[in-house]
Length: 343
Image (cartoon, rainbow, N blue to C red):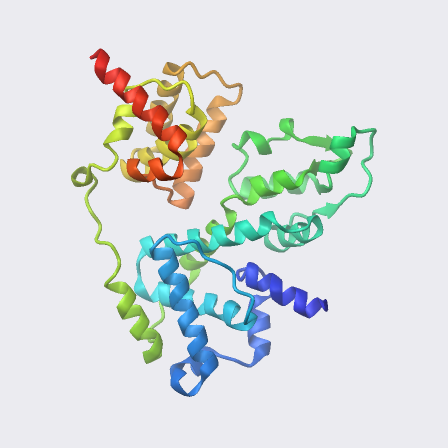
């Protein structure tokens, strides 16, 4: 496979990485050509795919990567971002960022180590490199896992910039430091980029200017999608998160880590809109009531509060939790029932 073809396939998986704009500019195709899709079949394909990507995000459908026409797949991402920005909905910007970020995340999990290394360096300038031999006598397991290294100073600089230093898994004490380098496994790279693709796309939205005027073909799609956006509902009127208030009254021994990252921080900072410190106090009090004594407990709580706030994470509705995490759902229902029975 030629390097240009390989690079194009990479742009399909990660249409937000450096080099995409140059690729599109060199193609000679421009946004102006989308103004009349009836006379340009490629423009019609791009518009159709861009609309699909936005609707997939809005409807929370799994977005699949398409390789049948790589140019259309890459260009449609840019066109979709322009239309989302034109709609002026932070809700849709977050939904689109999350959908596209998750799609790229799934692709990243399947990459070879060398490709992972290149993507990380392109996005975060980590100065990462692959390692063929460890500079110390290591177990066979370590030799198989620790295939990458990053200068320690650069690692700390980037982790601080990404606001990941509170994640215990990424702390220096929980990783291998030798001769000025941090040695990492593929699993650690996944930890680093877990939410970063979505954050990267959302930050791009914040830097973009709202388009003053769109070609009629794009404006038609914008108008159709705009009317489908959910109307914001006041928190106190919804009642969909009452179960979380009941969780706070019900000590739960099993599933505490999932409650910590999936439910409590998103609820407190993004639904109730309490301050970070108030959220921290509520969560720490609850976790202590559950008998939770983690060495890095405070850092883990602060990390999850910051993560929920940074990516705009909302807690799942109870019926959604029953579908996606039936084990945790059962644990929560039983704990709430036990508490209510004792009252």
